[in-house]
Length: 121
Image (tube, rainbow, N blue to C red; front, side, top):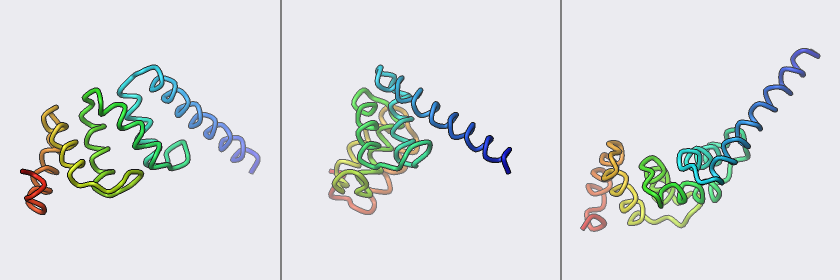
């Protein structure tokens, strides 16, 4: 039992360091780290789940053309998680992500345009 407790403490420490290290890189402007911090907040991995903080970090990376952050932020707008639900904004982000080479974003754009053709004009 004592062994399990020690292992749990060590793993908790590693996870905390993982988040802190990634956050430090994100604050220094690393766009991949910014997207990763957004994902960590979104999923609640190594940190308490917080959709608003996730959206903040996705937006930072998205603003400089990070295709995965654009699709992630678009999903948040589509679902209304951490941001006001806005399918038009989701469309814009997904289209930009598709233009930046994200093939999944292209599928999201196509699906959204089939559901809501007026958004895609």
